[in-house]
Amino acid sequence: MLGNFFRRLFYFVLLLALQVLIFNHVQILGYATPMICLYFILLFPPSASRTVVVAWGFLMGLCQDIFTNTPGMNAAALTLLGLLQPVLYKAFLAKDSDEDESELLPSARVMGWPAFLRYLLVAVLIQQVVFYLLEAFSFFHWQDMLINILGGSLMSLLFIAAIESVRIGGASKQQGRA
Amino acid sequence: MHNLLEFLKKYNYWFLFIVLEIISGTLLFHFNQFQGSVWFTSANEVVARIDRQYADMMAFIRLKQVNKDLTRQNIRLQRQVNELRAALSKANHVPTPTERQVLDSLKGYSLIEARVVSNSILKSENYIVIDKGQDDGVHTEMGVIASGGVVGIVVYAGRHYSMILPTINVKSNISCRIRHSNYFGSLQWDGGSSLYAYLNDVPRYAKIKVGDYVETSGYSTVFPSGIFVGRVVSVDNAPDGLSLQMKVNLSTDFGALSDVCVVVNDERAELESLQLHLMKSGENAQ
Image (cartoon, rainbow over the protein chains, first blue to last red):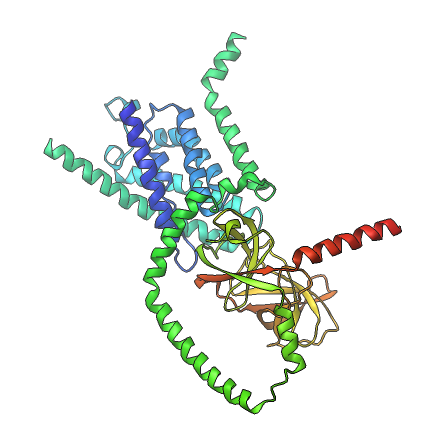
C-alpha cells in the first residue's frame, strides 16, 4: 500500500517535471502544446477509490497551473478527467479478460494497443476541450481554439504513447530478468 | 436517514468532484482580486527559482546569438559615437531647448536592471516574471522598459521576484500619444499576434499617417513621457465610429525578451500626495 503510494508520487513528480521543464516549451508554429500530465490520471486501476483519483487529478492540475499562470484551468480539466477515468477504462477494456479486472493496471499490454490508443484519445480530447474552453472564457478566437485543441491532442497522444511504450518496454525487460 | 447516509457514502467522490471544481472556478475567476494568490502563480519563490534555472540554461544556449548581437550593436554605437563627436565639435556648447527638454523628462527617474525568468506570448493573458523584487526597490505599478521600448507594468512585487503585466495582455492599458502631434489614446491588445497592438480613442479629426511614431504620453506617473512604443501600421475607424483605431507594430520583441529595466519615479510619492490633496480640496469646495 505504502509502496504503491510512493510509486505514484514518483510518477507524479516525474511527469510534472517533464511537463514543466520540457513540454510546456514545445510549440509548433505557436500552437499545439502537448499535455502529458494526464497520463498520470490514466494509470489508476479500477480498484482505486474514485475519491482518490479525483483528488490526485485536482492536485496535478493545480501544480501545473502554478507553473503556467493559468489559475484553475488545468485543475478543473484534470479533476473532471479524474472523475471520468474509471468509467472510460471500463468502457475500453476488452470484456473477455479472464483475470480479475479490478486489479488490472491500465496499460497498452493489458488492453492491447488499439484499445489503449482509443482510451488515450478520448481522455486527451476531454482534457484539451475543457482546458481551451475555460481559457476562451475570457477571450474568444474560435479558429485558434480549434487548432490548439486538435494540435494539442495530437501532440499529447504522440508523446504519451511514446512514454507508454518506453514504460511497458522497461517492465517486460524486468520480467525477463526475473 | 440510513439510506441517506449510505447514499452519501457511496457517492462521496461526486461531492469531492463538485467541491474541487468550485475551487478551480474560484481560482479562475477571482485570480486578480486575490492578494494571496501569488502562491498560485509563477511569482512564488520555489517556482520562480526553478524557472530561473531554466532561464539561465536557455541564456547560456543563446550566448552565441547574444554575442553576435552585442558585437553588431557595439559597431553601430561606435559609429554613432564618432558621428556625434563630430557633430559635437561643430555645435555650440550651450544646450539647446530640446536637449534640455529630454534631460528634464528623464530627471526624477532612475532605472533598476532585471533579468526575465519566465515569459509567455501565446496566451490571451500573458505574464512576465523578473528576478528583482521589493528588496531591490521594485514596487507595484512601476513601469518596465527594454532596449526596444515599453514592456509593461509591475502588478505584483515579491521579495526577490516580481510579476509584470506586459503590453501583450488583454488586461493591459497604457496611455500613449503620437510623436510631434500630442494626440493621445490608450494602447490595448486583442489577444492575437504578439507583434501588434491597437491604439484606441484617438479623435477622428487627428491627422495621422502610417509610419508615425507612438510613444508614452507621461500622463500617469508610471512611465516618463516620450518612451518609444511602436509605429503605426494602419489607421481605421473604431467599431463605435466615434474615434480612430490604429494598428501599432510594437517595438519590443516579446518573444526574445531577456534583459529589462524597471523605471523608478523618485518624485512619484510627492506627485501622488499632491493629486490626493487636490481631490480633497475639490470635495471641500463643493
